[in-house]
Structure formats: C-alpha cells, structure tokens
Image 1 (cartoon, rainbow, N blue to C red):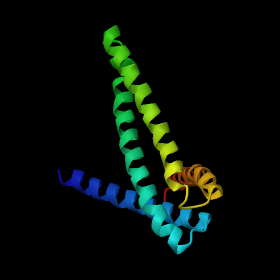
Image 2: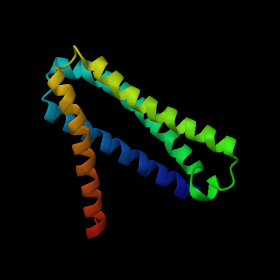
Image 3: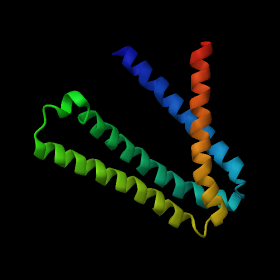
Image 4: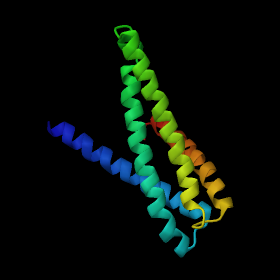
Length: 138
C-alpha cells in the first residue's frame, strides 16, 4: 500500500510539473500580456479540465472495447458502446470549438490559431523528451 501511495505522489508531482511547463511554454510562445493571461488561463483551465475528464472516459471505454472484451459482448451492447465512443468524440470536438469561441475577445484570433499549433508542438516535445530519457536512462 505504501508503494502505491509513493507512486501516486510521484505521478501527481509529475503531472503538476508537466502542467507548469505547459503553462510556461504557452504563455511564452503566445506572448500573452498580463491582462490577456489573467483572462486566458481561467478559460483555458476550464477547457483543459473538461478535456482531461472526457479523455479519461474515452480511455475507460476503449478498455471495454479491447478485442478480448468485445468478443464476449452482445450486438446490442457493442452498438451501445460504439455510440458512446462517438458521443465522446463529439464532446471532445465540441469542447475544442467552445474554447475557441470563449477565447474570442480575450486574445486575438491569430493567437487562438497559434494555441492549437502550440498544443501539438508541446506534446511532441514532451514525448520526445520522455523517449530520450528512457533511451539514455535519465
């Protein structure tokens, strides 16, 4: 039980560190003014919290849809799970669209478009760093 608690604490610290790096990366690259940042981050954080929850739900659903699980499901249950997956994908996309709408008037449209690119760029850099650490044992 103690090892589970230590693992959870390490995971929490890692998640917080990644969030802090992401905030710094986005703030710097978007060149947010103080006023923009004060208005931007609450909106973005609300979006992000919802995205995290939707992705968690999707991950749980995809676990149910693994090959060994699907083979034991009825057609009706499979159709229901497929519909759930489709609904989650729609909610994820709608949440992204809502973020863009919510940010209009807070930051210029150019920065909204840049944000989408920066999210991809940050994830790519983060994954590359993780691969490098595993490769070199750091």
